[in-house]
Length: 263
Image (cartoon, rainbow, N blue to C red; front, side, top):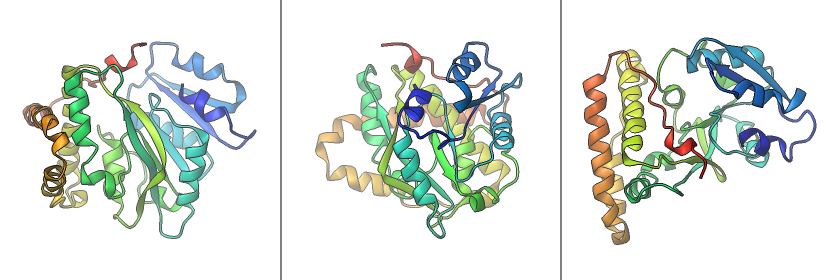
């Protein structure tokens, strides 16, 4: 779906697309190769996202450069808009605004996202969660992608609010988990990734004061969202408890399979 969206309206040679199949046991590489010479495919037996990002960087030549998860939806128009923003003076990181497709998800999952998408984080240069772009100067901010769970949070923390931009006119779409259990799993992975970053890179652990207070103040003015608050709190607390219990221990990658099933 991603490759079709990217290539549908792209001019010949406009995009340099590198797909890294990292330890895939399915038809990922074959599907990517079916798009012909417009897509460069790199395969590795190492099932590591950080290694895949570094291999992709080694194979790519163009800047600005977007790092895109394979299970999001992003078209070439949004790529152009993001690249244009990355050309502005002082902007080193940028991303389209994230939208969440909750079709087929349970009521509790939809309730969680109704609150989560209002978090101030998304209004303060949110970069990550599936797509982020770096200018050539921004990419020089670090050498290799470190072996961490939350590569997007690592990149986000490298830049100040003034250096990273959310492209409001542009969007990309991620599919929500369909079940509450799957949602808790991926939020646990996210929370554990943030704990890992704070432990390994304390200098990047900038204070995030006022985020919860700002969200609470916003919700007080929106009574229609009050029925969604219990689901949001339950998922937030459950994922935090699970993340703290397993922080620092080897973990399997908690991938959500429910959103990948055909409707």
